[in-house]
Length: 104
Image 1 (spheres, rainbow, N blue to C red):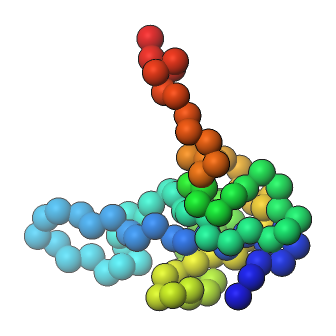
Image 2: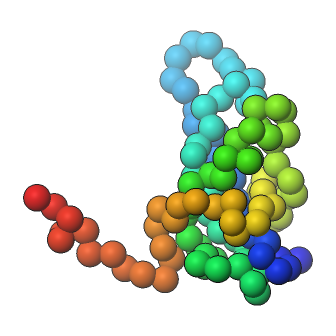
């Protein structure tokens, strides 16, 4: 499988487990706001395999309506989105960021 044009394949982070005595169905668990870039199409801009990104809002809306994922890749739930749907890269896989300069 490979991504075409501006398509990006994102691996969905697993739902967070809650501690306590109430068992919730998977659809009611707190969803993680991050995804990992698995594949990037040749025309996608600003993204690299391994980047950690904020989950695109279009997929948040889909999940609330019951659509959990778009495709399974190696047993992992994945989303198929356009590069333009991704608004924030949280951790760039190609750069080592020196956080010491950000400390006050």
